Each structure stands twice: as structure tokens, then as C-alpha cells.
Length: 380
Image (cartoon, rainbow, N blue to C red; front, side, top):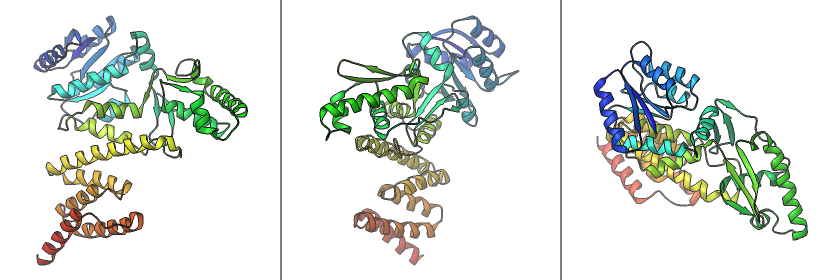
């Protein structure tokens, strides 16, 4: 992978060069303190990726990235900066990543994983993917984006055709047998009637996918089933899963990436589609989001950043009121911030919800903590 580094600090360039060489997957073909020289080199060579500082003389890294991507939409850009306030603008440019100085190797390894996840067989395929920046959102309502533009929603002829599409999407890249689909949707039908129903539904799906099928969403026949393939489309659920698998340790350097990934989970997996077969995946993503969120809350709490901790724990408690560890953290953080009325309100609310939903009391740990807290408050 051919890389160019642009930073107005010579020491920063040398440090990043050493780190990239240590990873063993980059060929550094140029490093520049002058952004205009760096721009010229990128435009003259087959550069794959640019590591770009944001604070540069003459023009900012954001402006330089806009110029480069206008001429080279296939180019991957990684912003490197000492400040996190530009992260939103960076990702609006579809930057591959946003690294905070000083860069740690664990964080840089995540960048490599993200780069590998986007690679296709050959540079031409990667270029086609980067040029259009297609995204498919499966958290919350299903949506497809081309760049920043949301494409019209798919208008299904029948509910069964819609469910078959989502089932194939759920198993994307794998062959789903016709017998499996028959069992899923027409288990009570005579086979002589069920198979024509299946073929008709698949026909409607093909018609629905015609605007995408040549390049992006491919529905293929196999010997005994169907295969749905996506080409050059980034899925929010894949990005979320990739972050989980990376096992990145939470730190000042990785904090912006934690925050960004958590925002992907706008709502449940395929929210609004009441499919029994999606329930296990829905629960898996839910538990992963809660775990990441609680890790983030504890990190903020441990660093005495109580306002940030409160913001995140409130989101967990609102979405999942039966999550007792989240409720305990909410009360502990409220207490540290001096919001004693919120501690009382939340405990009463937890008792009420648990009684109504599962006919149980809060855990012994929570009851003990609350009673100890209430006793200290009354004595004080």
C-alpha cells in the first residue's frame, strides 16, 4: 500500500514513518512538510493513502483533502491532528480515519483493519467503491445512501417479498436454499403452490433491485437457492462489528472512535421489522452496545468527567430501563454531581418498572447501595 505523509512538523513525520514501517503493510513514497508539494506528489503518483495533518501552512488539511479527493476520489485519507474538534468535518469528507496525536500503535492498527475491510480485489474495485461512497443502514429504519444523498425507499409489492429480501440480506454472501425460504414463509402450503409463490416473490425483488443490481446489490441464482451479494456498499452493522472484533482499548487516543461507533447504533437492528429470525442478532447488537456504552461511562466517571458520563448513562437507561448496572451507575453519577433528587427518582422508577415488567425487585446490590446512600443523606 503506497502512502504519502504530510505534516508541517518534521519530527511528527519521522515518528509516523517509523510506526507505519513497523506495521509492514505500507510503502512510504513521500513525506512532506509543504502541503503543496505533497499535493503535487499525490497527483503525480499511484498513491493509495495519505496521512494528513490538519494544521498546515498556507492551507488546512481539510482544504487539501477536498482538493485531493476532487481529483482522486479513490484516495484514502487519514487525518492526523492534536485536536478532536475537526472529527465531524473529517468524516463528512468520508475520511478513512481520524487519529489524535500522539499516535499509539494499537490505534494505528485499527486504522489498518479499517483499511483492509474496505479493500476489494484490485485498486479499480476500491476506486469504484470510494468514488460513490454507498452506505446501507440497518440500525433503525432500513436506508440506502449514495454519498450524502438518501435514496428512495424500496416499495415492496408484498410483505413476503420484503421479508425474503431482508432474510437474504441478513445472510448476505451465503447461499440460502429455496427449501429454507419455503419453510420460513410457506410452511403450511402444498409444495406445488409454495414454490410458484417463492418464484413470484423473487421476481418482484429482482424488479425492485434493478436500479442497483448491475453494480451494487446482486441477487444470484444457485443450484438450489439464492445468493445476495453487496459490492462497494458499507454497512453500519459491519463497521460496528469490525470495531468490536478489533478489541480496541479505551483511551484518550481511541475515545473519538468509541464515540463515533456508538452513534451508529441509532436504534435496534432492523427496527420496525418484526421478524423472529432477526431477534438473536438484534439482542447481540443490543448487548454489545450496552457493554461499550457502560465501558465509556465508567471511563468518563474514572476521569471525573461526570457530565459526559451522565449524558451517556442517561441514554442507556432511557433505552433499556431494565438494565440494572446502568441504573446503578446513573444513581452513582447523579450523586457525585449533587443531583440527589435524580437518585431518588431513578430508584423509584426502577422499582416501578421492574414490578410491572418482570414482577421482581431491584437486585440486592442496588437496594443496599440505595439504602446506604439514603441513610448517609438523612444523617448529613
